[in-house]
Amino acid sequence: MTEKEAFFARRERQNEAVLRQANLTIKRFLALDGDAYGEGAIPKKYKELLGLAASAVLRCGECITYHVVRAREEGATREEIAEALSVALVVGGSIVIPHLRQAFELLEEW
Image (cartoon, rainbow, N blue to C red; front, side, top):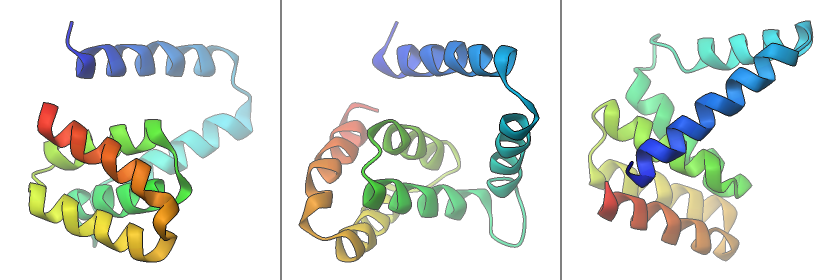
C-alpha cells in the first residue's frame, strides 16, 4: 500500500468511526463541509486550492495532505498549487514554511 493509499484508508476508517457515533450537530457540519467543496460558482479545483491555502495558514498537516491530493485530482497543476501556497505564506508568515515543505514533498511523491 502506498503512503497515499494508507492516508486515505486511515481517513476513511476514522470518518466511519465518527459517523457511527456522531450526533446531529457533527453530521450537519460534515454535510456542510461536503456541500462547500462541491461544484458551484467556483469550480471544485479552486475550492481545493482555497482549502489548501487555509490549511497551510492554520497549520493542519492532515488537511494539507488532503487538499494537495484533492487539488491534483481536480486538475490543479503544480504551478497552481505553488501559487496557492505562496498566498498562504504571505498571509500566514514564516510559520507556514514547515507546511510548505510538507506540501512540496507530497507533490514530488505523488
